[in-house]
Image (cartoon, rainbow, N blue to C red; front, side):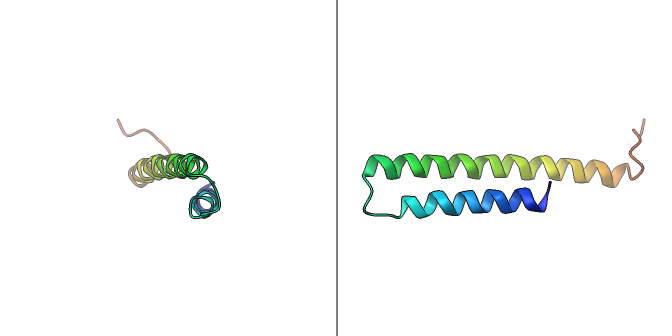
Amino acid sequence: MGVWDFRWFEQEIEKWMKLVLNESLSEDDRAMYLKKAEQIIESRDRYAKEWEIKAAWWKDNPNGYRSE
């Protein structure tokens, strides 16, 4: 996970955006592809936020123990 997941997100965004920019497709198709790209972007951002939270926890708990 991690770096490879982010690479996958970027590849998916590039794929859908390439279709969005294809002017030979209908407006409806392009709108659908744009929506898919936006969904992937939102997923990537949520995933990044989860990793930030995990990284902060790991920094506070380097041995994996709860600090109570």
